[in-house]
Image (cartoon, rainbow, N blue to C red):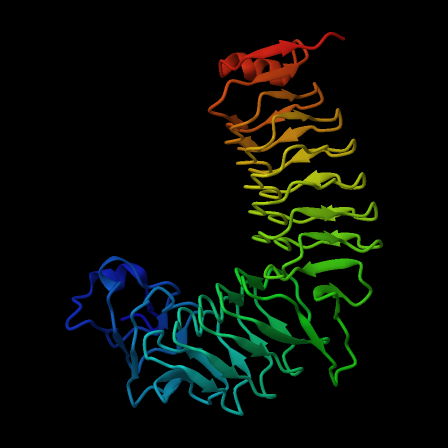
Length: 396
């Protein structure tokens, strides 16, 4: 047998699962991520043999009914403490079985890292205490912890992964040290979170601050995240902000109006995704790209002006914006990506200039009749003919 052998999803599917218990055969040295599927969906317990030395992040994240994890006593890499899987030295918390019934938890003092997906789907977890030994929180660490109400991140934490706090629908309070650096979307679908709180840190590094409960970097040039549980109907982004990070306002259902300053040069993907009640917003003139899913499902949006200087309209950027009836693209746009204006059921007229030379699949797919206004011989003219879409030629 090979010295290194990986236990993968196909191996899990081939196992005979008895009494909802999965036994990984001895001889495997690594457990691949996402081993759960099909016949493993009702696995309630799992045994890890002595031979396993590496467990990849999110290896057990699809085992939603997992109650117990057992580790062979001769395994020199892993152990369980109170039913939770750890590295042998206890410095890394790897997986808490989601259905073990854990309601509250105090992290052991020597834990330095919470693994990706470690507390995923722990639907009974109401409170957790993180200690000052903790350095890293992995991606999706608290994914779908639906009754978790509060998280205090100690200033010892230097890194937090994408979507680490996602689907925590009852989270009402989170405290974040100013020294924590956030590079992606961390807080998603936290519908009751009304404000972010940034605490002072003993570290010399300062990366975060808040203004009116909204999360920014220290010089307020980057808007990092917006608390979607906030009740305000209108929000004005402070002047001087140059960038809005991806997903910042995603699912901010209460907002009807967002005012953006002319200082903004970059708006990340998914930024206003599913802002169902957003009616008024103006894209600043310095923005050159409308990223993927930026305005996806902004159903109340009735008009949008795409400024001169924009060169690319990203994947499904305005998809499902039912309220839009007319769109005019400036002659700086050269590329329109797949589904950019798909499912805009109220769209009747769209003007696309001859500067557009790169047109991807199904940029339009409306149930209502609409007309493309275009120049004769342009790429969009050819696109309309090929796809049997009604068009009207613009006179030069």
